[in-house]
Amino acid sequence: MDKKIYKNLREVLLDQGKIDAAKAEEINLRQVKTGESEEEIVRAMRIIDEESLVKAKAELLRVEYINLDSIGFSPEALALVPESVAQKYKVVPYSMDPRNKILSVTMANPLDIETIEFLEKKAGMKVRAAISTEKQINEFISEKYVREKGITSEVSKALDERKKDEGKTLADTAKKVSAEAPVAKIVTTILEFAVKSRASDIHMEPQEDNVRIRYRIDGILQEKYMLPRNVHEAVVSRIKILSSLKIDEKRVPQDGRFFFSSDGNDVDLRVSTLPTTYGEKVVMRLLKKSQKVPSLPDLGLRGLALKNLMEAIERPHGIIIVCGPTGSGKTTTLYSVLDKVATSKVNVVTIEDPVEYQMKGVNQVQVNTQAGLTFASALRSFLRQDPNVIMVGEVRDTETAELAINASLTGHLVFSTLHTNDAAGVPPRMLDMGVEPFLLVSSLTCVVGQRVLRKVCKECIGETEMTPDIESEMKATLGPIYNMITEKWAKDGKTVKMPKVVGCEKCNNTGYFGRIAIYEVMPMTEKIAKLVVEKAAASEIQKQAMSDGMLTMKQDGYVKVLEGVTTLEEVLRVAQY
Ligand SMILES: [Zn+2]
Image 1 (tube, protein in one colour):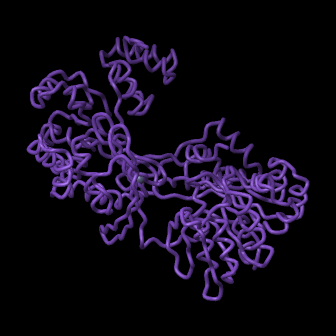
Image 2 (tube, helix red, strand yellow):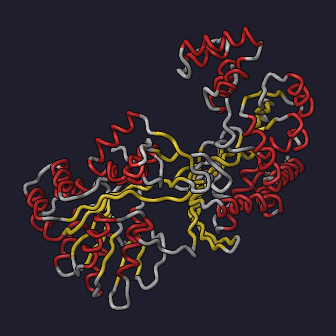
Image 3 (spheres, helix red, strand yellow):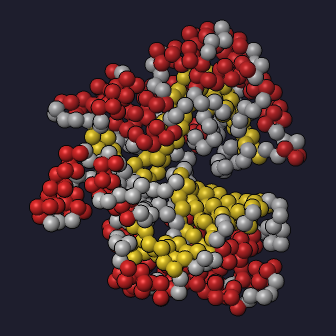
């Protein structure tokens, strides 16, 4: 579908709902009277922020808007335009299509034909111009050109090497090139950045024309580099050599690991390769060795929720279940709990898939289905090993559920996880698995529901006022708690403020730094036990838990927004259930 053609900026802003008809008329009149440009007027009137203005300009000029903070950049494209040229013409080359010979650049003024023609001559390619804010362009030039000089020149060198080797068989060159300095340095740069930016995973994805390198930071994938497709094979070979994988085997997935050290951080890398249409996709998971187990309050557990969980942990027996979808931080919570109970007086055993973190004083066992070591079979052997505390990675089937209950009833403290959306959903799910209701209520002592979200960066945190819609949603969800927390604003007759993301160098311009969980903790009270035995629905169980004083995850999230720990967007992103 063709995009709408606009005649002027105020028309775009009107269409986008950024201004009303009266404001549009005001802009028009002022333009006639003073002869200023619409852009100057909009800026002077401070109607919208700079990014919205540039986005509107993109619509008007029918060019792409590029947010330089959230795209991965291409060292190959960067190498084509030297820093001095970028500086002089305020232009950032951000991607390149070698097959169609197109260089994509972004500029504050994409109508600057002279610059575009100059670049086309210099690069020997067609130049496609997009628009970004001047601030982003200046920041990119002053920061990235300097910081990424290393990888940019290594990529150019690696490409030159490849050109020399053209005509030789691919396997030969891959083996040879992968050991050479430029490729080794590219891999090191990718790993070093991962460690520096606290990434938990690195994804290397070959696409039609290039290779996308993304990092998972604070749980979110972020694009960082676009490497030329030609170096992919050599880069993958280098990683395969490091992790003792077969270089020539490209048709089947492989798993390996290696060790990397940077800046005093020792990192264990789990590597897995997967053949895709455009080549092998590589995912590396980073496990830091020096990482300490965070305490429960550090994870975000407080108040009555913390007290109820601690009471369950301090009992000699019972089952404690942590629930939530994959990536909701369940394992971290369990490690934190185990760290509390693992003293020299108790025997702690775990069966995990995989063992994500090595704990002192804990006997950890890795699931190995091929060797017949499953959650259920391990649990059975554990009971002959005189344990006090058992952690089972996940309750996946009836057999594991029944064994866990048996262990609890014979005097053991059992921890596990379950894939349900919320705490109240756990008892009905276990009944669905065929567990006897009265056995369940006499063993299950506490259920924890959780999600993990990003903390707003303390260095650059901003503030925003709450709209009436949000305010009424918050009031409805939090009830009387809302007034308790917002008292400090109400006392001074001020409107309630919420954190807003800004972005700085420390947080990679994301506005977020670190993570925290939102929790709901449901102890098995007599009233809830009665509902479970009656096979009540999860919604009824939740209602009872709330009247027993449980804060739901969403409520806990809203509290953390009002306390300035995270943003409303983050809570809504993870708490949709
Ligand atoms: Zn920041």
